[in-house]
Length: 125
Image (cartoon, rainbow, N blue to C red; front, side):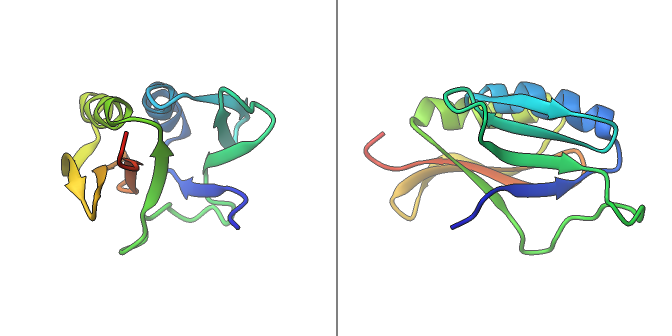
């Protein structure tokens, strides 16, 4: 079982603004922040951080993994659409508009650092 997921950033301030708004669209809230990282949890379980954005500990430039994707399971098609539309408005790059894939409803985008992120809802939504 996965405890949490972390992606790197080269600009924590910009990433904070991006993810604060984007993850609010799928009911996640920033619950921790400092000069090194930020962490998000479900609004229903604020003490269980699921997702972090961090400056690399080794001080090298953050890079995205080719073939790596972070996927957020949400409860509805509307949340998938909201995630995608919000992400694009915030400067994220399209990697696949919302639609049915493999029997469920998905969308894909890249964050400001190129990390591939996805939101999906199981059918029936």
